[in-house]
Length: 99
Image 1 (spheres, rainbow, N blue to C red):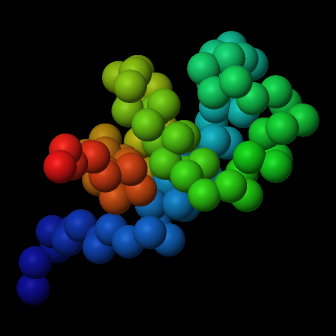
Image 2 (cartoon, rainbow, N blue to C red):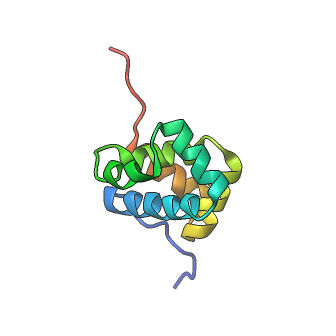
């Protein structure tokens, strides 16, 4: 029997859990939160309402993967590898195809 950990299957629910963990990390750091709010155009009062909108979790992970230091911090906080966080982002925010 192998003691090697097999990567868990990435699905939307797991990707959203990672995004929630990322939001928690961002919200716990005033500087990161201010940057996230500035880039998204949200204000603190609108953050809760935005969380119910389709695409919000994708936006969080898009923000996370755009900055290596934040990606590494989120991966560590979520107990995941950076590659797993990237897979979650790709699942929630797949690349657009030009027709």
